[in-house]
Structures are given as C-alpha cells and as structure tokens.
Length: 230
Image 1 (tube, helix red, strand yellow):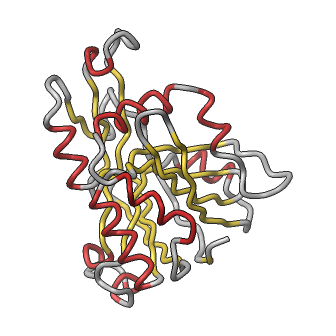
Image 2 (image 1 turned 90 degrees about the vertical axis):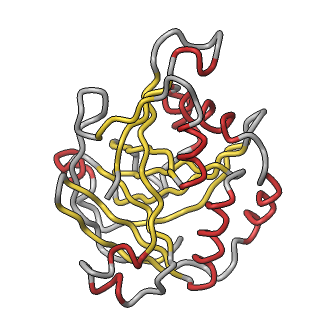
C-alpha cells in the first residue's frame, strides 16, 4: 500500500511560504487490490473504493477505545477550489481524507461507491494491514452538485490542502461526530488519485518521500470494527 509524504517546494505558493511544505498523502485504491489478502475485500464489488491511511498505534489505542463509530462526507469551499472531506471517527480518534472536487478520478470512485453501496478503509502499521468494509448510501445527495468542479486547476487544491493542514483552523471544519466526545487524535491526508499524482509530478521541485522517512510523520495502526454511515 502506498502511503507517502510529498514535499512541496518553497515557490509552490509564492508569497505565502518560504519553507518546504509536507503534504501527507494516502492513495485511493479499489477492493480488487486487496482481494488476495482479505476475505471482506473478495466479497465486495471489485471497483468499490478503498481509503487507505497510516496512523499511530499508541494514539489510536489511547483515543479509539470507544465503540462509537461514524463516517461522513463533507465539503470545504475555498476561493479557488472545493475540497471534499471524508471523515471516519472512532471514539476520540478521527481520520480525514481531503479530496479534490475537480478530480475526475475522485468522481469515478464516488460513482462506483454509490453503485455498489460499498466503501472500505485500509489501516496500515508498517507492513501490517487491516481491511474494514463499510456500508454507504445509494446516492450522493447534495454532494453531487460539486461534480461541476471537474476541470478546475488541481494545483489550487494542493495549495489549499497544504495550507489547511498547516492551519489550526482546519479543525473548525472537522468537528466531532459525537456530541460530548472531543477529537483528541486526528490524522489528515490528501486522498491521492492517479490524476492528482500527475499534477504533483508536474510541479518543479516536488519530492515524494516514504511515510517512515524523517520528512514524514511516524505511522502505525489497528483496525476498528464494521459499521454503517451516519
């Protein structure tokens, strides 16, 4: 499973940053990619999307002991882009994927998700993987209108996502799913697709490093139990 950090160059967003900006990324995958390793994956439609994430085991065990679980879609509208948010929360632990509403690969995955009514998460601790299937609605509801963003400049999304991750105000858009339960551990990644990877590769000075390198955050994980969308 590819989990890595992209380091954006100082000139990427001129006038805002003077240092390299780390951008934690997690690849959007399909159930078929994990069918050889997990029975749950074999029982899913092959094109059902899978959100990957690498997290810290100690923090997860500390803050995710509750049986409370939730998955939600959301949107953050910025001036030059629209970010879709995928949020999975277990107790006080929340995992967030920021996605580019202008990304055609994202919408292909969303269509596959609603057709199959299936989604899954893969959690990584170094070489160990856990596969978690999840039931989803058959419609995107109000989120379908953001398909109109396809074709906009995805570089704007990368700048906004990187800035949001560095900005403590991002937490105001990522509220807890449970009344009275504060989020004490949050893991945020850009949801990387082939389209977005090509955009990154086109930016001069961009470097991709392994998730366990000095430039990236240390990762580990355990798997929560199955549930349904709330």
